[in-house]
Structure formats: structure tokens, C-alpha cells
Image (cartoon, rainbow, N blue to C red):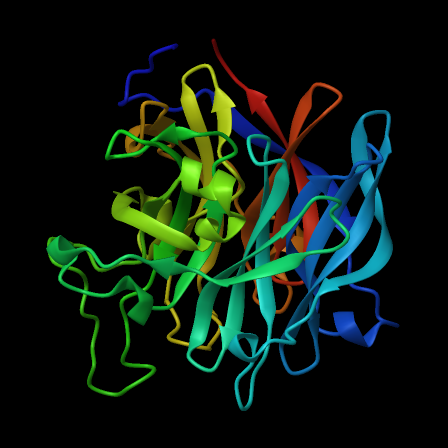
Amino acid sequence: MTRLNTESALPYALNRVGVLMNADPADPLEAEGVLNPATAWGPDGELYLFPRMVAAGNVSRIGRARVVIEDGVPVGVERQGVVLSPDEGFERGAHNAGVEDPRITFIPDLGVHVMTYVAYGPLGPRPALAVSTDTISWRRLGPLHFTYQSHLSTDLNFFPNKDLVFFPEIVPGPDGRASFAMLHRPMWDLDWLRAGEGAPAPAGVADGRPSIWIAYVDAEAARRDLSALTSLRHSAPVAAPEMPFEVAKIGAGPPPLRVPEGWLLIHHGVTGPVARGFELSHGAVYRAGGMLLDPDDPARVLARSQEPWLSPETREETVGTLGNVVFPTAIERIAGTVYVFYGMADSAIGVAALERTAD
């Protein structure tokens, strides 16, 4: 494995390619924007985009669209309808509903696409999972459950959780067992849900800002029964806000990409005010950066970008439902180039090329 000096910047950069998808003003399901997509290759060899589609009243669905590729570059989409709607009780509240911000990881060892998403239900954002073999039909496995860990002195299932994404390959678990790993981002503030509850972070967690955590699934259990993917163990913090562009919070982006140095995780960092509960973080700025995780212990950060790789600059990134947002959520290799797909101001979808800047 290639080694990096942890004090040096990661040798990668993101360069804009363009806008891939705008909301269709004639479609009421896209009235409030298309954003934060997942991606997956279909059995037909085509690449498909799975955008979060937001209807009036902030009701989100997950769509499917074929990515139009010209000369190896993604340039547009052909819509193919909706694959997931907030139809289950855990995806709906009395005055809200949504299936939001999907991430899709194809796990060859299981032969399935694994979609993590946020169910916007009665108690706010909760993590959930669905699987597919054809990228058309998705079977819900239900909400995720985190096994109780006495040393944390709390139940992680109490808390809202976002930015969920699986690694594509088996990794070593902290117990030495072959495991599938998932990154997640619990949020400790419960005041918005029940006044006076405060932010009871787990024991040993000194920094209460929203941070990237990891959890594990026993690989053999998942091979026997895919529903084991919803039962996560050994949850632990990976990275807290550290750089100036991350001072409010951070969260994982696309599935980690295996590179010579380890696992490359593209993430978002936020500055400015952090909204509570169901509110939007107006006034905040979302930027994209990267960090390198140890392949032998993916809970260990080897290096991280000291400056953002992508900041909101274009009109599509600065003006929208929530201005000043670039929010990376998907990554794919097309004709030798790695492309990152990202939400733009909670209203449109852009694409950038990931490029190596040094050897």
C-alpha cells in the first residue's frame, strides 16, 4: 500500500464537469427540486441515476433515470419514473413524509445493490435500507438497528441519523471477523424533539458536533440472510470536524473508493448555523473534501484534505432551496475517469471529475 504523510494534502482534486439534471417544472413530483442522487450500473450495462425528487410540502421520493454518456462524459438523463416512495409507516409522520438522500453500493460478495436512505418519519430522519438485483425493483429491509454497546452508555437508536453508506468490499471488523462496514452520522441534539433533553452524547464523546461514525455487519450472517445488513455492531467514531471548512459538522458522501493508499472517502463539511430537527440550515455553506481511511482498519483516518476540493461558486450551487451547497453522494468510473455526482443548492444535480494531482 502506498503511504502518505498525514500532514500533507491528499493528492486528489474535484473539477466541475457541469449540471447533469435540473428539476422538470412540469412534474409536480419535482416541484421543489432534484438533488443528492445515488448511482448504479444496471444489468443492461447502462448507468442509472437515483435522484431525490422533492414534491410540494417537502415530500421526497427516489427516482430512476438513465445517465446519458457522450464520449465518456455524463451529460444528461432520461427519466424512468419513481422506484421508492414514502409508503411505509416509518417513512411518514402526521405532517411530513419522505425517502431521502439515497446512497447505493454494489456489493459483489452479496450480488446486490444496497441502498441506504433516510426515512423522514414521525421522529424525524431515521436510517433505512433497501436492496435490488436489477436496479428497478427495490425490496425494503426496513429501518437500521444499532446493537447496544455498554461502553457508550446510550442507545444509538434514540438519535436521528444521516449520511449512511456501505463500503463495497469486505473489511476487517474490530472483532477480527470479516465484515461489511457502513458509515453513518448520528446527531445528538434532542431538544428539537423534546424540550429539555439537550444533546446527550455517548460516553467518551467529547465533541458533540455531528461527525462520521462507522458500524459493522458480520459478513457470514449477511450471506445467509440479507436482513442481517440492518443489524449493525461495534459502532465507533471515525472523524469529527477538524478543518476550517468543517467547523459546524461533517458527513460521509459517496461509497468509499479503493485507491492505492487505502479507502478514499469524499465527504461534506459545513460552516455556519446548524438547524435543528426538520429545519433547513439557511446561512450554512456546504463544501466537499476528502479523507483517507486505513484499509486494515477503516475506522482510522490516515490523512484528510486541509482545504475543500469543491465549494459552491456557480449559480446552480449558490441559489436554490438551500443556497451555497455542494453535497457529494455518488461516485462512478466511466471510460477510465472517476466522476462524482453531487447535489447543488438542494435543487439540481451536478457532476465533477475526480483527478489525481500527484504521485
